[in-house]
Amino acid sequence: MATRRTDGAISGRAPEASRSAEFPSELRAYAFIADGLRGALVSPGGDISWLCFPSWSDPALFAGLVGSGGCYRVQPEGRFVPGGYYEDDSLIWRSRWVAADGTVECREALVYPATAERAILLRRISTIRGRGSVTVLLAPSGDYGRRALPPWRREGECWVLRDGDLALRWSGGAEARAARAPGGERALRLHLELARGESHDLALEICSAASLEREPANADECWRRTETAWREALAPTSGVVASRDVRRSIAVLRGMTGPDGATVAGATTSLPERAGAGRNYDYRYTWIRDTCYVGHAGAALAGGEELLDGAVRWVARRLLEDGEHTSPAYLANGDPIPAPSHLALAGYPGGSDVVGNRAREQFQLDIFGESLLLFAEAARKERLDSEGWQAAKVAADAIASRWKEHEAGLWEIEPNRWAHSQLIGVAGLRAIAAAATNEPWTARALPLADHLLDEANASCLHPSGRWQRAPDDEHVDASLLLAEVRGALPPSDPRSIATRRAIGRDLSSDGYLYRFSFPGHRLGEDEGSFLICNFWMSLACIGVGELPEGVRWFERARAACSTSGLFSEEYDVEQHQLRGNLPQAFVHALFIEAAAAQEPQE
Image (cartoon, rainbow, N blue to C red):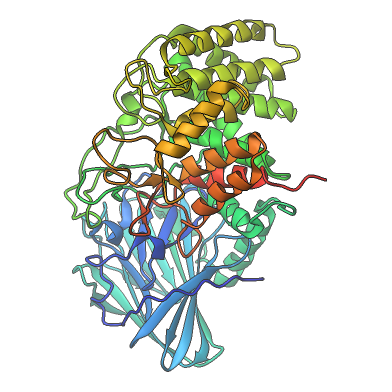
């Protein structure tokens, strides 16, 4: 399989405490592997620093990212420089360590596609140059590292751990010996000496106890299955700018999306947006809005229908079940998300631990407009079934009955009559009316859209002619770019032009956009730039025919990815660092959509 290399330049060394949970890496240094139902972060020093089971929002078995227990490290002995690269068209990662005596790689993947009751983590260690002396340390820990697990037992050529209905089975480490991890957990330690060209496979099964009745995972077969599934999962992207990066973002979204179409907003929790500011959130849930963005990304590419169909299917089910009281976010299986709470962990430096999210109790009007935009996109492609049309009617009725209420809006802040939410409602109603061919109820959509636009015009139009955030907040907001991007009004409308210019003038720094300003504070003082805003601006500029300007905003944000090509929610412009949870699905989705908008026309 073709590969792309992005070697880093962070020095490291092998003693077991050198890359312990107490010393996490900067976010840009991590790689991400996933199977659709859960994901893991791989540190440059060879740690699995984050992995929850059985699903994204369940407790972590490896929680070193937030300063807690659990360790699964593959690391060369002696001094080394870490790096790594993704194999093309996949989330198969190759950690690479260059040392004085040799170069070692570890091929990393979660077996894809996965089942809910079983995850298989594959690690294939190989020596590329010289000789490789490698130490492997395995020490899972229960409940985010807060609970010790029972000891390992040797069963044939495997090590097995049973903890109630949870079981782990490790193949390839038969010669391992009992040890202690840096955090004190019971561990298995394996030493390997590999000559050039030699490889050694490790397979860690995390599963229900009943799954141990199966034969142990066969590494070769698992690798073949995973390679084939990734090749089949990615849509072609010929003719799209930044094609390789687009394909990686598609892989990230596929890795974060389950078989029922639920895409988690983020793979991690508690990573701070600003050190010491208390801005730490749990994004391991599925947001209606974010899932709609993923559907638009799929619709933007030939062959991306599976992402579109999955998003439509999942959003429609939520609307049909909960109607006008549809929550902004759910567990991936559709259950309510937990309220925020703390775990008494150390947290990532500068942050604090949190699980759960306050969005479960919020009303966010814009999710109904976003749902209509998604359904309209599917209808235009003749991919909206009767259930989807029923859900669209639910969304339209919810806008009609609730648009006057104060709500938390896109940014999930204090309730208000946010202009963005009303304008997205306008866009969604107009889109579904235009896409309908045999749905009588859509006749009410256009009059309602006109009424909402009149109301927004009366209450949220700034004296300068641009949109303002809310009736009592005259500031501009980057989310107001979506009014023209999604079709609430044309890009050539004077309100669109004035808003676009004000955002570019008032919310940008060094080519990066912030979502809004904090009165009395300079941009960047309270939070990082929001990368999704750059891609919104790119789409707005391209939509009005300003291609060079659109490309400038696009490329600036594209440069803010990690060394492995991942986007977080925020980017610290001054320190050139990623901020917030990693990876962030909606940034990857808008990156894809903005790239597709630049596709050369025949």
